[in-house]
Image 1 (cartoon, rainbow, N blue to C red):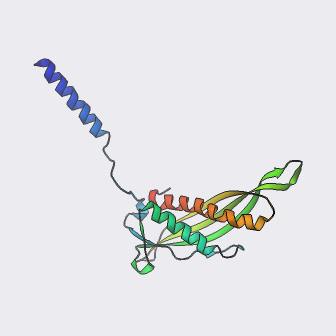
Image 2: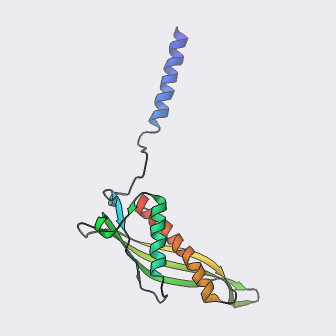
Length: 173
């Protein structure tokens, strides 16, 4: 009887330790403190403070798609939202990533960086809940038409920035 009691007691201790390791974990999304009462978001079209034309809709829809894919918040109209995300595209920068062999002044590859300033505003009180600058990057190779290749790299840079923005809104970092 002593051995049975010992094996049952040790089994119960192991079960208790295994369950204690899960203490504090919850199932489902855990929002950052500044977003604790927010369930529905509105994302109006971003402002463009750059010289790059017609990128506002691209930046806005990319963030909306990323938020919908994450699923933590419901994206709605502004009259139904708990908070509003106002975005300002502050920079679109192109920098040399790689020079041509034998000519350091000529580029063979560029980095494209977009910067977006986000303001998260409470829809009821109009108070600013938080702010964050996010940055997205992509690369493109130089061929015949550099402006066209840059336009093709923009969606990837905005997607990178949107992943960071969604991470901030859903996880706080």
